[in-house]
Amino acid sequence: MSDRIVVRDMEFYAYHGVFEAEREIGQRFEVDVELHLDLRSAAQADDIDQSINYVDVYTAIKEIVEEQEFRLIESLAEAIAEVLLSAYDLEAVVVRVRKPSVPIGGIVGEVEVEITRTPADLRSPAEEEL
Image (cartoon, rainbow, N blue to C red; front, side, top):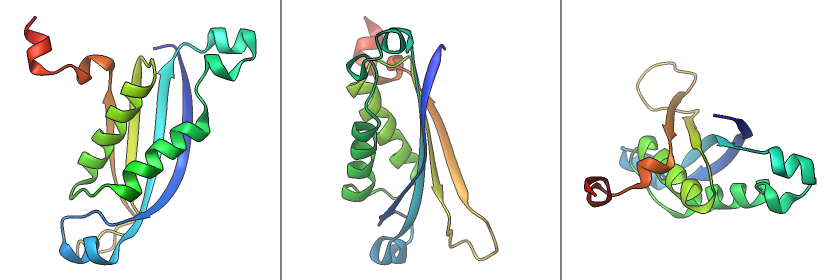
């Protein structure tokens, strides 16, 4: 992998969780993404059109986190990865989703899921058979 753009510590209030109370009351979620791509031409041209606009990335993630519902943060991370890989010419994307307040009956700082996906992961099983 070559270069990367990293957007860290995005915070959203949403209604995801296994427990009904989590989905009713809601809670804070934190998201980080790493976008792996070749940034050489953007850097040489000093042109945002040859790179990725961070505002667009944030807006896409905000829409997923705040407008969709998931029981698992694993599913939330997967949805974010799929949207970013579909929208941009990436070599890979790393998505981290954190739940700072986890109702597990003990003291825990946070729970985090991290996934790494590539464009090959977007292919359907039918495409892979070809």
